[in-house]
View 1 (cartoon, rainbow, N blue to C red):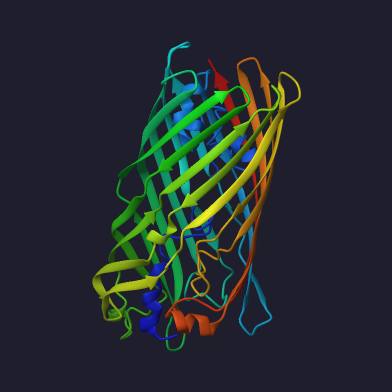
View 2 (cartoon, rainbow, N blue to C red):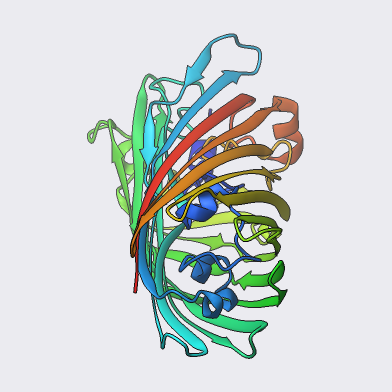
Length: 417
């Protein structure tokens, strides 16, 4: 690979394989919801309604605090086009978390609350010396949203809600190897995103005790990194190449995309609850990822990498059954369309259509409760050829076949008052 083309793979920055949704989206926002295939827009289960549908929060009668954490165990394999050696990712564990607290009068019409969650982020570490080492060796993305929320019940049947979504913390670290005439150097890009504000709003309607529905919209936020650090290593400082690869600064922007969701809830009996959600993610906003360098790197101050993502749908189905006053069990499934077109798959987002199965359970004693959930995500095998990369002008990535499976156990604690 030519040095110039190597530096143009900066598009790898800020993206990564997500734990439970297409692209780099993460939807592990509530332990009860996680056990039900991720449904929640048309339900009013608990304080996690602040994420799934703020309009439903006013219908959650219990005020409370809850915290949850998940651990994603991903296994990815790659076989280069025309090759037979299967490359494995190093073991990587990511821990998306969520925290909710809601307040309001016991018999009043409103609820206010605060939510903290991680809607985007992941970590990938490829095996040393793999075929795509000059595109990516390691990436870590973190994004934490804080959402102050207010919800109001207009009548006993309909409620509305909204919250500001504040990108309170965003950070990225990208690493890859640099091909030199007789060896490999290494480049690391590290930066933090500036704080940005969007919003999350929803409407919840429950015309009867056996049926409910909701709609939710979460706006797009552009995560901007300004003045990130570019650091080169394993390049002889006394060589003529050193001047072409200076340590410098970079600016970049990544869209944290908008989503629209609709959901319905069906309660055939007092013990059984069923939910169905459809999510529409506006990935088509993600056309390219551009970088600006403070000093020329290999003769250029900019780099552009094509993405050309397309909008995608996710379908979710789940339910819960209350066995006793303290014990509730859950199960669900989801089908998630990939936003990545053929010939645009990158090592940091080896994405494809995915199928998920979930189980979960809760046990409550008085005002305290504990929630468990586990998800298994199978990302379909995805191949792209060198001829596709040439036709699309995306030679800044590698041709071959990817396959990924992810297991995501989670636990949460809650207290109602």
